[in-house]
Image (tube, rainbow, N blue to C red):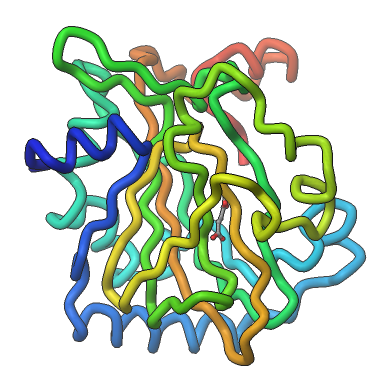
Length: 253
Ligand SMILES: O=C(O)CCC(=O)C(=O)O
């Protein structure tokens, strides 16, 4: 469970660092499994990456939770599952929205994105009657030590509540290949292996550009509230038009 100070800092800054969230043994196992997965996976096609607007982001594997028991164990890891319940909040129980591994090498970065000015449901931050109600809360796990210049996650503390769009939106910082190195108010999140950054997704964030040799290793799990109650059977889904399917509570993969 989160403590009083974590609640205060999460409300104030939009993030907290959970020190030693994973043990050395857990980090070793995850690194070993990721080495195998990355060896099996072809390097990303630069053209496709560019088309998606993710050039120079790093090398990532999506739907990581499908890749074995070490990744399944992160779904409800005791170091953060109660924090997630508290910050998603209320009766809206959290569900896993996404899971990925991100390796970042020299010259790579995640551009500036999110921020309170985006009024999408998943980038909402609310606190009411002693309860948090966040649209998405993320856990970013460091699988090696993160130093300055390593392409580490950067956040703009407090930007989850800002009324004014950061003036660096619309500049190269949030364009293709952009980074937060030139973003006023942004700070690098420096962590030791096994630490985890818990942050609300409406915090303006991204990363610095990696200037040091080597690779930043990380895992990102995203959680959001599940408020739908009806799950349609596949027989119904299969006979609906794509337009009707799009209004039902399951997406076809
Ligand atoms: O790679 C990072 O440090 C940040 C990742 C990120 O911002 C994202 O995927 O939304």
